Length: 90
Picture 1 (spheres, helix red, strand yellow):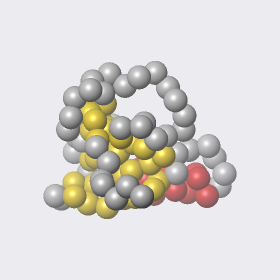
Picture 2 (cartoon, helix red, strand yellow):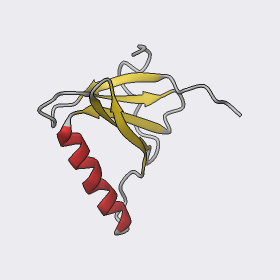
Picture 3 (cartoon, helix red, strand yellow):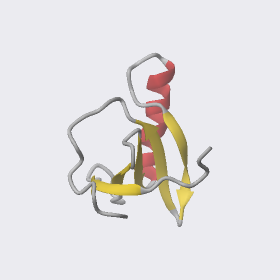
């Protein structure tokens, strides 16, 4: 069993959150990590409501704060085009 934390690779800046933030993907592209402020926390709560109602949205696997910034880790809904900048480490 691998207990190492995943490596996150920068995908893009988040523009929907006034606090800024970014989107990252893990090595095998099965999870995404979004960072931001309180707007992200509200977005995640709404996303949980939608999932509970059966809408096809990514399930949230983890959330919290890290160094004062909100983060959300969610499942990938499938393989899409390769993420730009996926080779850079963040």
